[in-house]
Amino acid sequence: MTDESTQHASKRDESGRNDICPICERKVEDEQAVKCDGTCRKWHHMACADIQKGQLKALKETSKKKSKLMWLCYDCEQDFLMFKAGKSMQKDLEALRADIN
Image (cartoon, rainbow, N blue to C red; front, side, top):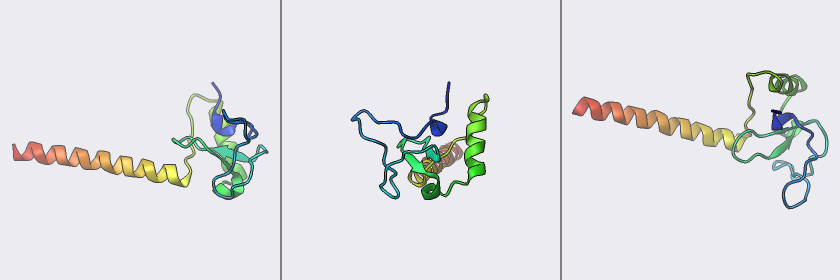
C-alpha cells in the first residue's frame, strides 16, 4: 500500500482537471507537494503548506514502513482538533453524569 501524500502530484481528479493547491490556487504539477491525509485530500505545494524538504522526506520514508506519519492541512487540522475537543467534552460529561447518579 502506498501513501497518497507522497505520490506524484500531477494526478487528475475524477473530472479530469489537474489538482489545484487550495492556498495559491495554482496547479500542483511536481513532486514537491504533499496531499492532505484529512477529509479534504487536497494537494498542496510544499511552500504553500510550509513543509520543509526534510519533513517531506520523512513522510516519504515512513510511508514505506508499517508506521505512518500523517500530514493535515490547516483546515483539516482544525476539524480534527474540534473533533478531539468534542470527544474530550463528551467523556467529561459522561464522567459528570456518573458522579451525579
